[in-house]
Length: 65
Image (cartoon, rainbow, N blue to C red; front, side, top):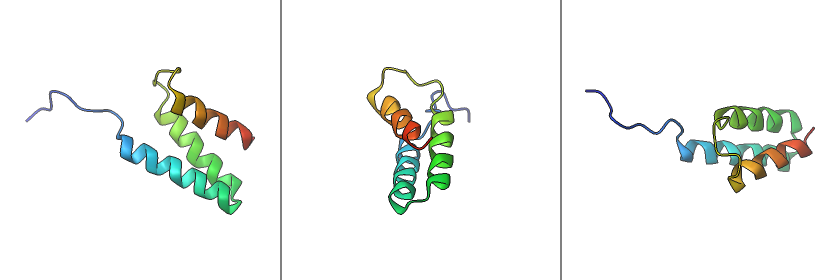
């Protein structure tokens, strides 16, 4: 059975990963937070650059640099 439509990115998983990144920031673990943000940005590489959440994630990641 072939799937006619499939969502390439599970939004719940993406939001969980963002939550994990933010948790690492709150814990002071910048290295782990950077890794989570990098993975999320890679996952969202084809997302519309005008989406507010995409821009916010990139801004949060930039603060860790």
